[in-house]
Length: 117
Image 1 (cartoon, rainbow, N blue to C red):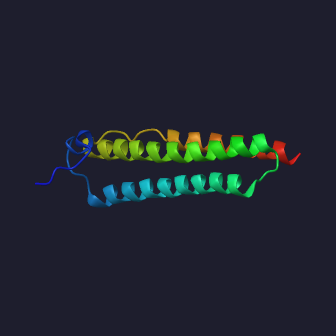
Image 2: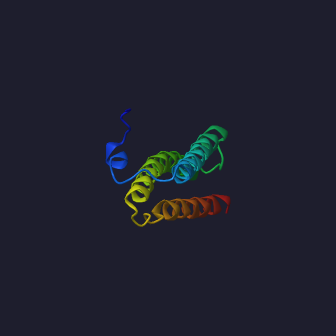
C-alpha cells in the first residue's frame, strides 16, 4: 500500500466517493489558477509602470504578489480541511478564503481609483 500525504488527512475516517475527492481537487486547482492570475497581474503592473503613481503601483504589485502566494497556501489548507471533513463525515469548513480574496480586490480597486484621480 502506498503512503499518502498529508497523513492527518488520509488517515482520518473512511475513503469518500472518488467524485467528491476529485471535485475538491478541481476546486483547489481553480484557486491555484486564481493565484497565478494575481501573480501575473502584480508582475504586469510593475513591468508596465502602471499606474504612473509610483507608490500606488508598488503597493498594488506587492499586494497582488503576496496575495497570490497566500491564496495558493490557503487553497492547499482548504483542500486538506475539506478532504478530512468528507472522510470523517463532518461539516465542511467555512469559506474564509473567499472573504480574503474579496477584501483584497476591494482594497486594490480603491488604490487604483485613488491613482486615477
